[in-house]
Amino acid sequence: MTERAELGSESLSTRAVAAGVVELSVRGETPAHAGEIRRACNQAMDAVESDVLGTVTEAEVSRTLNELEADGVVEGVRDDTSATGKGRPNYRLVPPADAIRASVADDDRTAPLADRIVSDDD
Image (cartoon, rainbow, N blue to C red):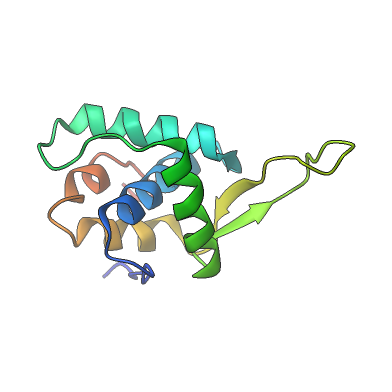
């Protein structure tokens, strides 16, 4: 049985953003900044053609990433700060991807997002 990670919120945006980070992670594309994660989320939501899922804005993604970081689901990496210290953080998963994917799959609204994520174990 796959370990399941607890997401701090049951909201649709939390699950969609977590799924986006998982998808980027299993493709080896993390750490990633909010814009890249937003793009991955919206592409995934378009691909599953769900009536429940729409799109997420970069502001929603940034806010959700801050919440996920506080919950220990993602870790912000600030290696590429500018000379003025205003670099955008990049995010990577803390728990195993399959544990987050299992949490996303538990919600009927976001299960299609989890189903399209292919991990090394599949």
